[in-house]
Amino acid sequence: MQQPLIFNVQKFSTHDGPGIRTTIFFKGCPIRCQWCHNAESQKFTAERMLDKNGVPQLIGRTYEIDELVKLVAQDQLFYDQSGGGVTFSGGEVMAQPLPYLLALAQGIKRRGIHLAIDTCGVVPQKNLAAILPYADLFLYDLKFIDSQLHQRYTGAGNEKVLDNLKFLSDQGAVIDLRLILLKDLNDTEEMLQRTLAWVQENQIRIARVSLLPYHDFGRDKYRKLGRECTQNFAVPTDERLAAIKAAWEQRGVPVKIGG
Image (cartoon, rainbow, N blue to C red; front, side, top):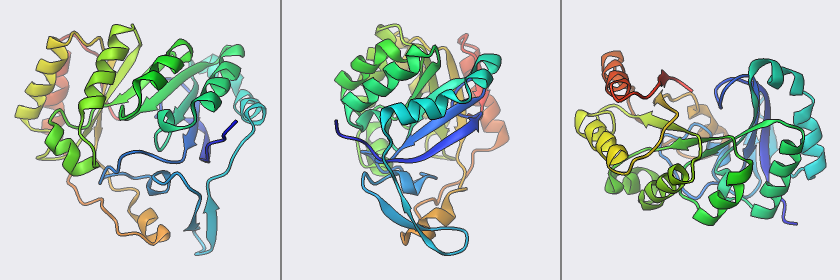
């Protein structure tokens, strides 16, 4: 079985789904969001990155499935007490070898652990269909409702994103719609209204909307990888975030600012 690379197993995570979680970060993503704060997640291959002392460290390793299940299960007490669980993230988890993902998901679910899938949506629909029986929650990114802007800032159009979002909704998946907001790009009133209209027209069922204002916390990672930093955006104003939050709430959707 082909094993994907994993670049971090982050325990006591509170921003990747409900409760206390362990987030497994898979290495490799099919798109290149210019605001990406995990530059080390982008390539599917292992690479060297300088640590805090300036020493190159290899980023990306493999785990046997049993090893990884045992590792995340160490904190099952915290999951149970907080309503948490395990999140598969990246990079893009649904672009990883599917047999491995399914076996890992099955091992986690056999222990009764809540499983969330964090995805950009630019993935084969068959992969989402295969993981659906094991996923309790999808953290689903919608970066731009406009496909040309999506292409410009991520390197891919948004057709798969919208098609897969509708598919998951139609299948009854629990969806936390995550809107990464960039000042004067996708936080405008026009983009808000277009997004709201598309969601309504396609009868997308959303459990929650998470508004994720842009941040540039990952700038130093590009330097440590020897790459040019592409994090050159601005943060939406508090007033604009409040207006977007109110617009979604008016349509009966719970909204949270932040992950």
